[in-house]
Length: 228
Ligand code: MN
Image 1: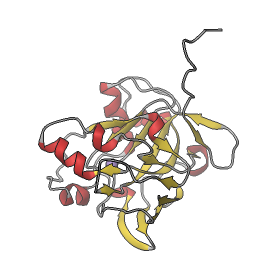
Image 2: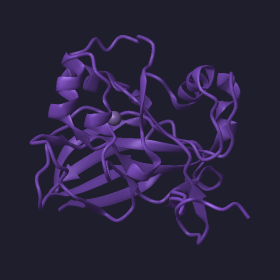
Image 3: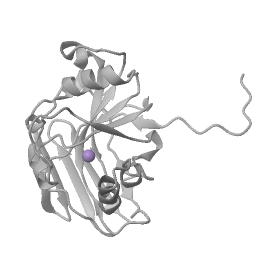
Image 4: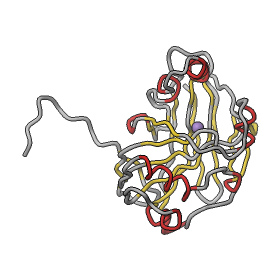
C-alpha cells in the first residue's frame, strides 16, 4: 500500500444509466466551433478549418442538477453538447476504427464565462478562466453505446425556463465523432476514461440564478439543471 503525504483526491466518476457501476473519468477534451451556425454567431468562418480543442478538468464535471452561478463573471452562457466517453485509447487511431473506442454517451453542458473567455481571446490567452471553473460541466448519466449505438443524427435542444434557446442536429457537426477521436489521438495519447465534449449548436445565451435549463439530445437522454 502506498502512503500519501495527505489524503489523495477522489477519482471523478460518472453514473451510468440503469446501473450501479460508475465510469471513472480521466481527461475532458472539448472541441470549439463544431456547428456552422454557432461558429457564425460567434463571429467566425464556418468553413471546415482544422478542429481545435481545449480542456476542462475532470472534477469540473457535476451530476447534481444544480449549477452555482460562478464568481468573477456577469455573462455565463449555456452550451449543450453531446458527450462521448471512451472505453479505450491509443495514438493515431484511424477514423474507421474510432467508434470501437467509445463506451457511451451523455448529455452535457459546457458552461462558459463568456466575458472572461472574450477577454482571453482578445489577448491571445488560454481559455481555462472562461471554461474550466468549478462545476462548469453539468452532465447527465452515461448511456452505453451497447444499448443506444452511436448516434450520428438526432435533435439537440436546450430550453431555458421552458423556452427553446438552442436547437440543432447531431448531423450538423462539422467534425464527426470518429474524426474528433482520430484527430485528438494524433496529438495526445487517449485512454480509457477520457471524455470528449463535441461542441454546441447555435443559440448560446446567458443564464441567471433561478433559471432552469433542460438539455435534450435525441437518442441519448435529457438533463435538467437549475442555476442557483
Ligand atoms: Mn462548447
